[in-house]
Image (cartoon, rainbow, N blue to C red; front, side):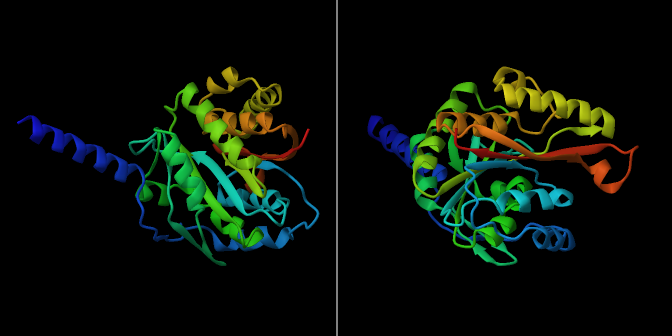
Length: 282
């Protein structure tokens, strides 16, 4: 009886370990996106060979793709890996942070995952696990991968989507692991986040003013208290801010701030707002 229970317990442990760290790599299909807006966005910005930014925040809506293009065009050309942080919009899955080793299909070919860094995260952090089906349908990652492949054709990706339930302790542990990876040569970090949702343009602009104030002040408690009126992933913003601060790359430049109403020239619709922010060394 005791022997049988022991064997069953060990089998469960093995299954959990394999579930957290799946070893088979496939290709995620390209998430549906607006090809016209993508083509227009990348036509606006050529790769800047002299750029030396350490990280960036940008949106994941097709309409604001030009902001993604402008930011990624400024990543160093020799960037080998981009750690991309974004929200797990439906809060699906069993882990507070979901990642995956699948490659991603893009218009410019396959974007590969950095399996070495992903394996380190999964092995060291119990709240990080691979759930490929959930990750592959998350547009905070899928909407960005074509731009990464276009501007950094030799780079790999470490996708991380954060559940809204992630705890402060887990965020700090994740920050430590990301900061260590970013300290390595040629690793950049970005957060794919949209800001105010569901308000009129003028109201969204007011919320944006409050949000950027908290970002500039590094007011993590204030950011944590915000909901969709301000941004869709406080955890993602707090994570990248703390990584940049820990690595002494916390100087930021606000490239752009707008919303869907302004871009569509519609003043009386519910909008989503966007920021593009760059990080530099202190």
